[in-house]
Amino acid sequence: MFPFFTPIISLLIAITGVDAPFGATNTIETIKKESAAFSQALQQEDMDKVLGYIDSNTMVLPEYHSALESPSEIEAYYSKFFKLSETQKIQKEPFEVLRFGDYFQELGTFEHTYQIKDKDWFTYEGKYMTWWKKTENDGLKILAHVWGGSRWYEPEQLSFFQVTTKPGKPLIPKTPLEHQITKKINTTTKAVKAGDFKKLSEGYLEDAIYMTYYDAPFNGKQAITEYFASHYDPKVVRDSLEIHVIGLFLWETIHCS
Picture (cartoon, rainbow, N blue to C red):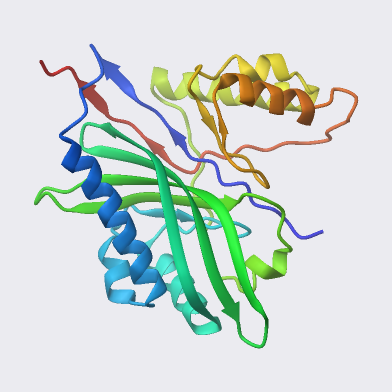
């Protein structure tokens, strides 16, 4: 069986006081504009522009591929994709942009139409999450970019090449918050193996968004709970489950009046 890599990034927000208010509307619009420009650079196979959004801390997690955790790995991945395929269109639809100080979380859906050499044209529909970071000169860099299909696709349609990557360093919890996250991961692992959908649902806010493999995003705790109830049958035996934290981003949002 072809291995399926489920990318997981643990994104933690250490809140001091009250959440910082959103910036001006044009700041959110800038994120959407830069996101569209990044997609255009990919569509035009403009490696210089693509790498302009990447820095030493950027992490990219493609579907059916191990994590890309350095600029050289990211460049190798996109170079090979450009060489082995031709893109007709990349269209993204952000449905939520949230601001946390100098960081922005963008969630959305996408359509990517491309052709692998000697194959038919193919449209890949999915969802994505991008974390942006504001730089010192008010520019924007991608901190993390993760995507996956909204339905099942044959592995060879998405994973027609691999690039060499170095395994990420596992998180060794040191701070109270890191220990709290580790405890949460262990609780989640036990709940999934036991098929305990009620326990899984406890960790989600009412307006949470859940992005799983082979499905469109689930919006709201009720929809997430219904998915868990249908998906995690306690009668189904799950032999093993591993959750690897390969990225941990901590920051504070300060209340501003």
